Length: 572
Image 1 (cartoon, one colour):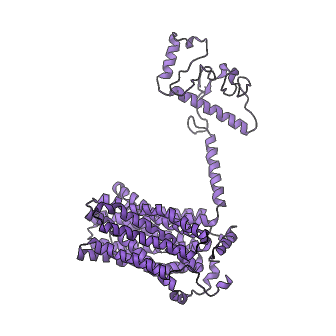
Image 2 (cartoon, one colour):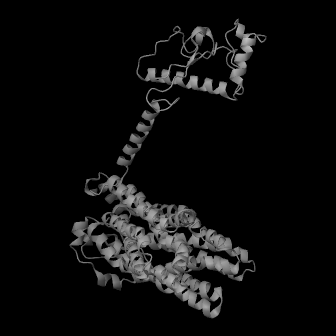
Image 3 (cartoon, helix red, strand yellow):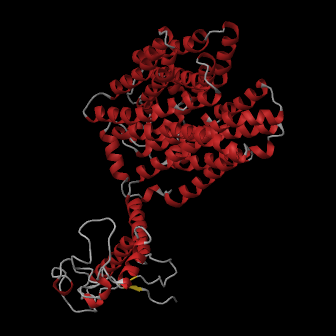
């Protein structure tokens, strides 16, 4: 053990020993000492020693003061005041009657202990810091345990959706070096990217049925494991186009389970006056995932190569599953707040989904769903909403590169603006919708208002870009319009829980089947129109405007948030 190091600092409590302001401080010995006289060679040598290193004297003061106060606080917490080594003067009187005393010690005992730590924590580190960190961790653990179940799982699902879109968009960046390595043509690269949507389409109805039967909180981790494992496997199968396409199909299959699972959980455990915020928070994770994926992937590729993107993103998903199972309880029947959630949902003209096992024994009323006009309208709305998202986001970088003559890196950076705008808009749209419902505004009116804003505001931005002669206008106006489309989280994506809370996962699966078709049909159709017309207005903006306007009209005309009367509801 290193010997105790003591630095004689004189009467530190006196005015002469401590400067009245911060800065370079000259440490002076006690009054009357030879070393204190300016003409003393010994004093000059010692003072030069302290001042030879800038800030050294200040560090000594602060370190000593910190240790002194630490001992006093520890002694006070134990109820046993520390015995003063130089007399017992009060803190008010200071050492030997001087102001600002340190532990009541006199001038002869004002040395500051700068002894090395004996606990292996490094010099100058207070062992009590570990206690503070431990208490902080324990406090957070207690708060998390006391947090209502619906808040826990909403946060967990939002993080899962972040990972979801990270794994979805990573191929759009990695496909460039992959095509160069394997000599793929643009047609082959496009086929590989589109393979995702086949699995995504196929997963909708099974995902809705599984979520309805077993609960979305159990289906979602299974989907995350599926798509994460398939993502991590890409570098090992990339040499074979067939196996690579199959891995992307599995990624789509796993991610296709997430929307029905999320809709089921929100309908079960979130009251109607909180659903817009919950839906916006969860599905807003997709925007966060897009930003994270498009930001992280290029740097990883440049540093470690394209395989690192798939491996790292896949591992993140597996870690999420481990964390989810560790901190989010699955035995929800034991949650004390569940009766309160049922009451809140009933007051909001909705209800939770009840017990999954009991619901699984009931037949799904497919015929009633097909004949329900508001649900058919919602299906068309979902198609219109995703046409704009898939086609514009897929072709926007190319549009910027061709029409604005920006380089590829600049186009990629501009492609980040829509999801960033969507994150900002979601912070306004969801609280606004829930606030209107809490004030007594009809749920149907709120849903129609939110979805009308989601369609007509980006349509107006797009028209301004078409008719404006300033091409630079589209660099910020188009992303703003796509960001305003995030109002659909408080309209379209919240409407399934309003119509039939018990079967919200089934309803979202039905509408999302048609909502996924623009990814398979709309993106290549836009490219075909561009090849034959050489016009972005005709190929990209024209069809999107058509679906914006007609979608808003159909929803206002036939959309509804009235609860669908189903067999057995009177007993729910």
